[in-house]
Length: 312
Image (cartoon, rainbow, N blue to C red; front, side, top):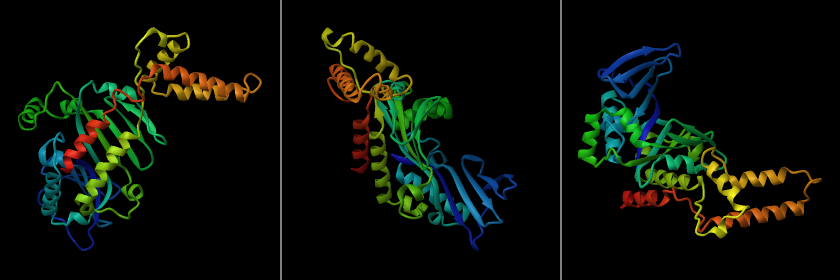
């Protein structure tokens, strides 16, 4: 579990940052000047002389170690300390505008099964992308994606071989990245301005660890159908099985779709009592299909074990 991408802003006041190790990239009509640290694209340094502001954007694990497969909190801190020394600024005072906290899990089934079975978080929009899915509202984005594919895109073969040698990375394993992207930490945590120094404290990382676990558990997931005998396969349950299979592709909730359909029927066709009766019948038919109310692709246990190990 580790912090990854950050976006932090610091007021320079009378301080003048050192630009000795920075490579100038461009100047924009907004007044911002873009720099890279010695050509490293993992972290961008933005300077606005007119407003006396400096901004840091980028992935600290990629900056320090060249990957985010297995990055420690101490490595993250050393990256911030190094940038502070390079810029001759105390970046611990910088205000956090955005940041990511997440982890990579090795799971026992294809990562694509996660994307098909994880439907939504109440109150958030669900958006699939090329190799993952995310749930988003005004202040937070909860992102699940294929970490193995991501590493293959970002790292060359020699770099991946070093991961295998140093961290046990297996190119054939199923790796899932679970990540909370805090788009507005000030409003999300409701504890005032969060500085980069605050973020480096063990107490704040503990908050982020548990928030990652709770947000994952809040994801609505498809329930697992367990067929044991032909008594379960009636003219009423077979259509529900098909609907549940399509549920994984849309994504949607089969139960919710049926509930809304019954609710929308006019009173001239079906009374309220009739609607209640139909819902009870549907609920009973769904109950025949489930031996347990769990999703077989739920990785809460794996995530919890990693959380426990990280705190021991």
